[in-house]
Length: 312
Ligand code: DON
Image 1 (tube, rainbow, N blue to C red):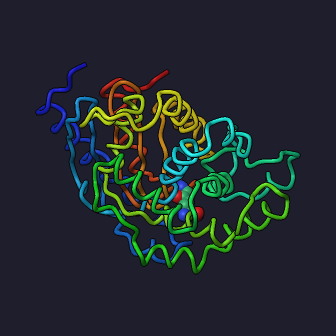
Image 2 (image 1 turned 30 degrees about the vertical axis):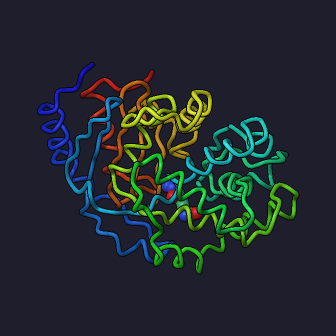
């Protein structure tokens, strides 16, 4: 379907307007102290088509930190570095039904790897698989890949949010040390977490994440330049894991109501990739109890219905 620009812009404007009331529900994240200063009234949306056209509405230029959306990036970088088979010998492909920072499965279930690369434990393991001489080289790899797949060379980390998480990230330290103690995680824990905390604090806007999603929707090819950045196979795996695990213990409900591969972050962003159709980036910092943007989910639900985007 060719999207008419005028109709699309009008549709996105009304999606913002219709879902603005939901910004009053939920709460902004505060367990990373600096995230609590986010403005819960912000609401933005951007769509990038496979022809490279972009449509946006609301606070689409407002920056927010990627948080867990970055787990998709480290997964891609790890797969490029180590190969799919190697990566999935160290991290599983199964949804958990538990929260994103849950520790329970690591001990209670007889499983020698974290369930999937979208929960914190799994993302910490994928960060440990990225190749590089030192922490800085490994993180620079994640950052430059992010800049490439967004076409935005100005992306950088939000230093305040990075330090805020680093100073308070004891739960992630607990996960990492537990995995190191059990032989699931290799390498220096502080170094691995440094890459993880930094990637989570990369600052983006709706347009940036809609472009990443459009690349995934386009089977690994950047819509605006035609350059292939990941294989069709890696793109297929990433989208599949987004469907089953991207919204954590809300992934089932999200699949039923919206039906689009997506990944959320506690910064309030959701990156949604509609195969062969478009990438969508939404932002609304007020979260539900699972850590997903409430108004963001509502906007995706309306857009999915209006444009018949469900893959199911
Ligand atoms: O590790 C953390 O807790 C955060 N940096 C990321 C968590 C997150 O975004 C969960 N997603 N909704």
